[in-house]
Length: 347
Ligand code: NCD
Ligand code: ZN
Image (cartoon, rainbow, N blue to C red; front, side):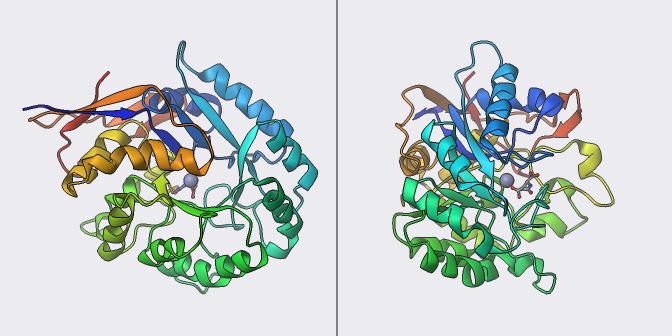
């Protein structure tokens, strides 16, 4: 028997579209299923100013396939030199939906990020005033802190003080990976939310490291123990308004992933919806998939839910999965969940 599930078109509230040939190659993969995506600003050079966001938005629109109904929601990359007036103008014109904070050195192209939170305090005050959310990469970068502990330490040393100093600021903790982050987000008020990726609902650190290192499973924050993955699945399928989808689909060409110093990022845009259906079905919670992918994120960002629909179909026999997509920048491996996939978005 084939099962069919009709959902409002989903929104991806954390996506890397890159630029140039890579943008051209990966954008159709998101536009096929998603109505909107919050586009990360960690290009080289980063998207810091409203003028840069305007130019990047134009490049994305130019790369969209004919007839695609897809709206990029732009973000600005917060630096210690960010001008509060520029941010406020970008928000007032509707150009940007959020500002992204990368602790300097935390992840791909984050060297221009924030070293000292005190130096962005004025921008954060202004954002609280105009109700513009701050998205943050929640890991400390202190070399002494073990990479598996970096998110949990960030909660105590950065987020708690930030909540106290800027209680009205709306904060999205991006791509959470630990039970501590799940508990922390739950304990905050409606100003605070978290995105959860598709791959962190599937991977634990054994998948990354047992039986040989799997470079295509390496992402930041790095996958944690199984108990943390289970806490993320419970949060994503809970129906709680503070948890929603941000795939963090982060393409890198294979040559840079399969490398002595491989880049961080999983490319999940092509099969995210099918994999999420699998995860939610396993929990007996297909009834909450739409809330996670299409309602709770839109609500948090004060956007109307999408009116268009997609149909997910469950086939009795597993479907062949795409191994790679081919871009002018080079081949990019599609995330392989390591289990048979029965779900498909109806073309
Ligand atoms: C992202 C990238 O490649 O831009 N990588 C990743 O592993 N998630 C950056 C990020 O979101 O940390
Ligand atoms: Zn990301």
